Length: 333
Ligand SMILES: C[S@@+](CC[C@H](N)C(=O)[O-])C[C@H]1O[C@@H](n2cnc3c(N)ncnc32)[C@H](O)[C@@H]1O
Image (cartoon, rainbow, N blue to C red):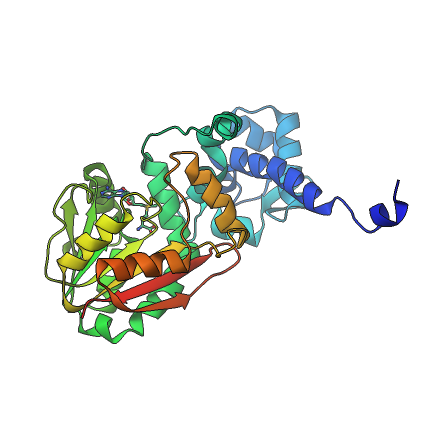
């Protein structure tokens, strides 16, 4: 045995993964039960357990885990949210990301098939079901991680300030539609998405009293007309499927006025396809749905945009450790 060699390595990368896995599930259990929403005032473990009809002994252990993780504080026998827990995990608060926790950790029906799919290479071959929790989780992800970075990049584009008609294709919850409309009040902003998602977007947008400011178009962008006469088409976290990418970009190209731009915001993977880590994990995760899903590289987007007819392709690197997004912009001359 080569002792020299073993003494230089340790198992920390593996330990980190396995303990975080356990912790993520414990956090998800607390979020699912609305524990942070109930712990805005100090309470003893048995009081919380009584409220939520849980076993007091295990509830206390769960609270201890949340204290050890910095999400709660304990004073004497009483527990209460820490600043982080209070800011991000109390339902109804502005920065709530509980649904983001739920869609990232909770609904892992896909991961249940990981071994089968690795073995057989086949995938589930069904579309992604964008239910309410998914849409809320995506909205929270946008608000918490990317919105400011995306918007700052777009605001710097002269095509944006001159735009009269903007399309948010696959706009989902409508966070970006609202932000685009607020930043350019003279533009008409339309959100295109599937019919059930449009119903959700209408409800979500009305909470921000922006309903009159956004137009809604429901349909399937693979088969339906997306309209014409746009000065900007914004597409965020929609184009992870490779088979329909050329035809959608061609459709977007045809929908734009001359001088119009397409703005794509997606998690990108490097050419080596082994970094950044969040994208690499996502690349495998979404390919469990269909072998056709995956992250693209900047050069892949560049090539497909050029093939669709776009020119002057430019890239804005807005990656953060948790959100490896890049913006790719193409111009229709
Ligand atoms: C991951 S969400 C992105 C939502 C939002 N753009 C964002 O960045 O958070 C993808 C959205 O694309 C929509 N979408 C996917 N395929 C579509 C299709 N064929 N026609 C219309 N919308 C579609 C989904 O319904 C969903 O709302």
